[in-house]
Image (tube, rainbow over all chains, first blue to last red; front, side, top):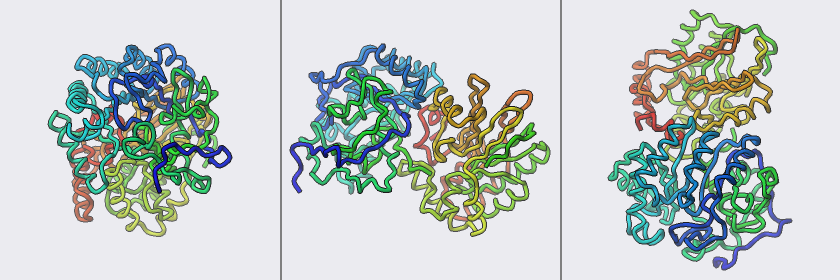
Length: 305
Length: 266
């Protein structure tokens, strides 16, 4: 079946709805869609010129944090764009780490030794964990740079080295763009490349392809059959889905998940409380979540016991 | 299970036996000296170690009251995996080895016992409403780590589950936090494997309810060399045996948050 040029969106009546069981994870689109890179697989097409979503201010984030405390949120994530392009990022993290654990998804290019040390000080001042997730898309310049841009492998690796030097164990995140039969070789390649810069016990997180944004052009989009139907969720543990336990705050309101912020119907309100309502799995990216679980979290949730 | 209003002044609580009948034997010997009012195990009787059936008579003779952990639920119902909550392939690989071993070596009687265990035990002691669970009150296999569990999240649990004291385990790492309103959350530790700190001892807890609620942790030495020897005889993974002999975790590491992972060796 040929790949769709345009994403197929199911009518509301045909899409299974997922209730929010509990708001455990609050995401922030803190870097908007503004990025210092122009990756060919970006699912929301972030770039230096994409101002569809702007930086969130420290004040905006603080207001959502205050609301999150009342709702019993368990953990906080920061993404973009590139979060460290936001000049208030360190202050935002200080505010967050006073309340709970924080994870930042970054391309690593702005993580100088000085910034890495400042981050380590923030972590040391908090009882909670600060995780840094650094995106790479190959274990060499030859495999990474065609996707993320010329020279990015060397610069990202330097950011990782600075974090390791500061005492972090960053989570290296990578979209799987290679065939399954070379998977183990690729992981070994990552470990070798990271060990060479002193990161001898790396944490690796491999993500599936999300076939939207620029990735739909780079590889392929979803085919019409790649969608979630009501029959597919019968007996399925919906707590595996990010939308059952998370929401994302942006400078333009609260959306259901980080993947769908460009979809108008994914905006659920201006406050977290307004955004607690169920969401229909009508987008084809929901199919990837359905197959792989909550891919965006540090640890995909386990099945209920 | 609700034990109602009790006159418990002091209890012993521990988690994660993980087939370590030698540590359980040492604990029960120590308990006879402490003379607590009750002894509670917060679940996960199997995994990791050898000879699962040797745990069963010790629990009965020791009058240990047990909360059902994810492992006990799986073994009791002959499920395909331990429902441990690991999501990394390497973590799951090793978890499956110990699960397959434990399932194959657990008697039907012990399985029936594990199937019958309650998911919660509640009681009141000197005015404190106490809730005993495995991972968290809301989910048996939820990991509540010290560095990823905010105060306001715990406050929500205390409110929603009408408790003043919550005791849990599952992570393998002990910790406690006291909150406003005289609320106390404590992970009671495990006796099945050491705590990823380079020491071979394991940990259990005592909880006193008067004059104020207080949780204390106690190191427990046991014949870990014999355990390692028996694990080797049972052909359990060398990685597990290394943990027993060194006190450092070698498997199931990917689920650890950054701060907890940094404290270990691997």
